[in-house]
Length: 188
Image 1: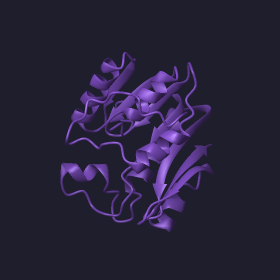
Image 2: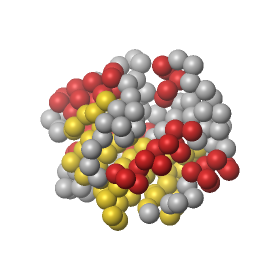
Image 3: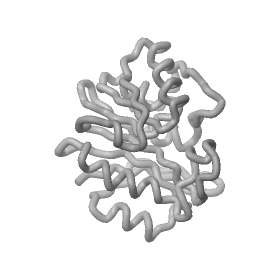
């Protein structure tokens, strides 16, 4: 999928705005027409919108009602169909998907306020990612794939443990001044 930033976004000041990590993940997204695709933690919804533009049947999920509303509004502004769901990971998500995309909170730190939900991945940076991977297998079509953004700030042993049941391939990477980001393609 191209790094096309041509979609219009309904920007909310308290919703995670697209940044380097978002655009790296977007560069790896390979949604195809007719595939069922899910964006976990949709934030601004930019990845969901691009998957919908590619013809995928998209579900966008977030724990923050403002993100769900912003994504829904952005889809309408762009004339795209995106189903939005307010959910803690897969708790309210039904069905299976060919593609699941997730840019989790991956920096080491604890959630102290609602703004921290966007970046704080727990003491090891992997807490939410591990929960996600434990639930994702039940929502992945046979032969499906997950695109997961990770950071070298994540505790390596905790990340390795979370990924132990998955086949892992690095499909994109970017070095920033303080960390390296990678996009992993995960399959069972």
